[in-house]
Length: 86
Image 1 (cartoon, rainbow, N blue to C red):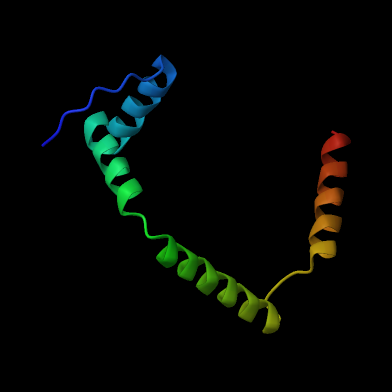
Image 2 (cartoon, rainbow, N blue to C red):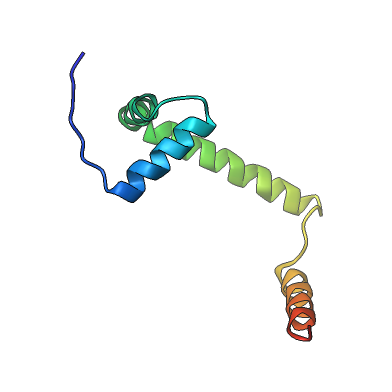
């Protein structure tokens, strides 16, 4: 096993420690997992997964299970106007 020494800004180190604690892990274990995921990433598999998600979304739209953008924006504008009146 190889040992690397990494210097982190205090805020990043503190955040890493909080995340590790919340997961019942250690900062070192999280960094090992992140490094492993980084070097084992497969761009072709990631692209295939993205294309599959897009195809599924398009199928949902084609099946009529989507709300048009204009309707969503109209609803959000009404919601925001109601907040401004408070």
